[in-house]
Image (tube, rainbow, N blue to C red; front, side, top):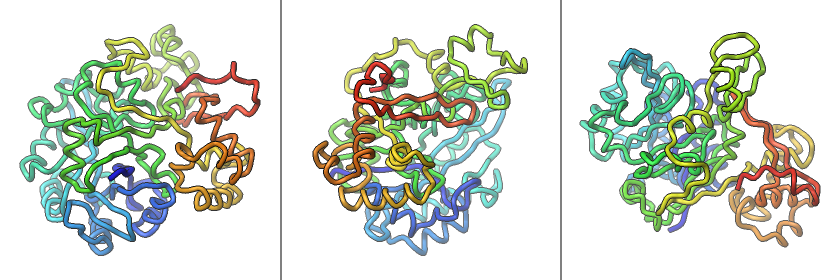
Length: 409
């Protein structure tokens, strides 16, 4: 069975999230997007867990169902601690196959932090110790380091991370089999690091609002069950784990280096020239994902390993419509066009990646159809994101502007 999964989202109980991040609305948008399997996020929060238990039906296969959409129990934990003389801030996404196991996780972690303070709680525990506790509860629990290159809160982050997975998880490194690449990197960037070859590289939206679920996702052709999906990831089986759908990493909030307070965006080469110091204020610059990947890479740009899991880059349909209309993505005009196009042509992911060109041009407004086709063909300019600021996208409109396009495919 072929399907699309987005494992990492947050509920309305997480900081800076939409009040619409609740089961009913998530299921509605999952159908619009074409997401068949959606992470619940935030199962450590008691109020959200109560809603999940009340609203979801156990499918008997490690997944849960609401209105035709499958859910998998997930949560993100922020570990903040000191190790090897440095403060570490590591985010991990936890997967569990049952509410009974979730209850045991929450009971075990409640003594290390206030699980009710946020949907993504902070606990004062070494990430290695977290994994030891979780695997002691159940071997079915899966731990995936989250958005692994983000500067401030990740496994390889320039501000608080490590240079190798073994430094973080020590003897439990062998039990980690998947990594989340995050919005500011894609698999191609990660392929430059040979030490990551054994891992399945997954991509998720990390969404804080229903409209943004599926902006990154994973495509499977597997039995719809917890055991089989996790098995596909553990074995990195490219017959079952088919591909990932990617944000343009340049659009991510930490792709380039920079200093938001000084409105400074800096390429890795400029940062090196300035010795990692902001030329405006003289303080250390925030080293972004592109620079950090380059620092740890042992392969050139463009290297493609054998038996890789392929990927497609895309821009969310709401952003394409907004760019075509010359308005903001949150405008009513954009929402109206979105809800007219999607039912007429298929799910959002089908519209972006599969619907034939002739059908797009016939059934969608011309400007929007051409915007979708331009994105497919790489006719995109992006001013890279930096230090918490999203990148700015321009979809090239002219037919003869090929020389301007950013070669991102």
